[in-house]
Image 1 (tube, rainbow, N blue to C red):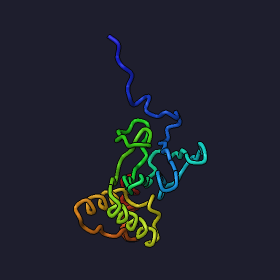
Image 2 (spheres, rainbow, N blue to C red):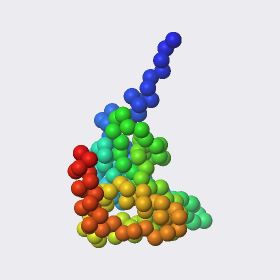
Image 3 (cartoon, one colour):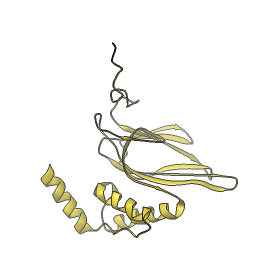
Image 4 (tube, helix red, strand yellow):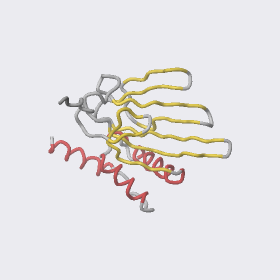
Length: 168
């Protein structure tokens, strides 16, 4: 009896242990971009496509928008934590292999609320990719429930940093 190979062994097509995100920009048709995140590698495929890579543990926001002749067909934002080699993950279109999805919102009115929460985090003096992952889960849950998310403050960020330091 042969044992099939573990899917975890072959999950990184690049072989470098990084999470790959395929970005496309066709003006007013398909627009995929990174709102925030520390890109480790940025590869230009052609004038409309790029592939960016994130190291394990990096948090990034991936925005997807698409339209046809009749208007917008997709408005979506995902805030994702790039995973390491043996970590479980959730698959996501254009993200290889996938990631730990902290926030997943669809529809332009809700996407714009997430973008406002990101802007508010930056206004508070915190880089959104350094904010506590639980904050992005909170934003997801509040917006999904039709509520306004609590702002991410510098005090909350300091508490998160202390907690992370204690937990090691």
